[in-house]
Length: 454
Image 1 (tube, one colour):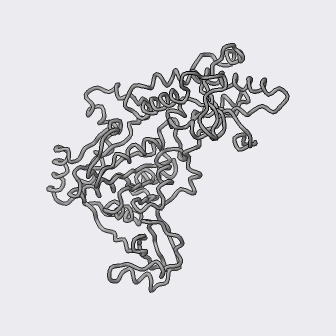
Image 2 (cartoon, one colour):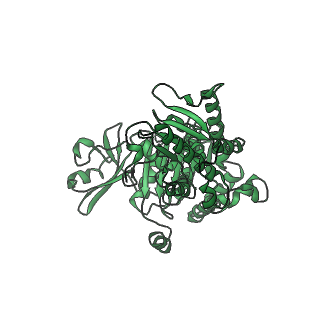
Image 3 (cartoon, helix red, strand yellow):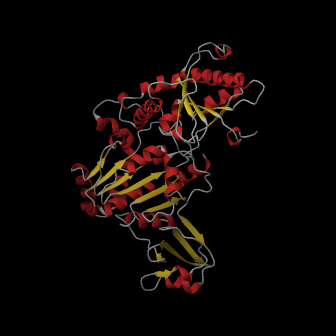
């Protein structure tokens, strides 16, 4: 099948509501092509205007921007989006040009009205073209079911791919295994400061700042990290952190990144049981004196209903079921400690808000100074939500995102379009950033078996 979007010539894109709620600036991403907004989309956006969540912000931003672009009058051609750009217009169906939809679908819905509008626009394009080739009309939606329905009516439909990662295989892992390192070079990492100039290891090609390496020669190996500042590789030790001892090389790398004061942004990816959240919490407690507060947060995404209003109690009580995994990890750390004083200290920090568990919905507008901020389950965040969180960072703040890109509960995100993957892909090569992909589950033999087979 030919990719209609890849073909040359002007096109007409119909935008679904979920695309705008995902990226309010999406209308600037279609170059010289025209954009059509079904009036049903404006109706839906109107219901999203009020609230503090990211989708409410996106709705307000888009509607304000659209009002500014269109001005006092919107012609049949639409309003220009600027030099080198196409036009944008609002569309609705005045006559039932697609009466057969009523026969196919048993109920009216916003999706079906958007589909009806898209088919109407397609018919208008075909009529206007006459015997010439009409402009392709493409419905852009993040709803896979709506895309299938559109294709059933021979209407081209595609996902919004502007912020998608190219492929999972090409996603940065943050670590590499390099074989064939001379034995004497490996030995040098265990002498003196454990640092070897990059010139002595030509086997490593184009290392990124804060990229981690297992340098091996047969049975000899060294865990190292590349320092852009000194243009050298430094040994990484496997050391216990607040009662938690790394069980593999990736966990040792993660602790190194989490405790490095020069690294202000860390991402840890991995399947369930690989230790992402536990490592981040242990590192935060280890360096707690350097920070005013340790903040913990995760997106409020349940397996069924996402509305906090269905749970009784105040905000704290409503959040408890969602935040329980964070408390579980704190409990693991408490039990790992050999003395009660440190475990008691954790409870005191919770009682005095030195450790704060907060919903991400209230993060907008805050400025976080000297905060060790851990965001769990980051794969359920959009690229815009990720940006919103990071731009809250004030002086002395460190932000850690943990997540599993194969375990997404958000209806309009996947392994390539979620904000966590987007962040990893965009931050590669930045000196303030480090990433580690944790591949081995360490929760239990049973958990590892279930993760691999089920």
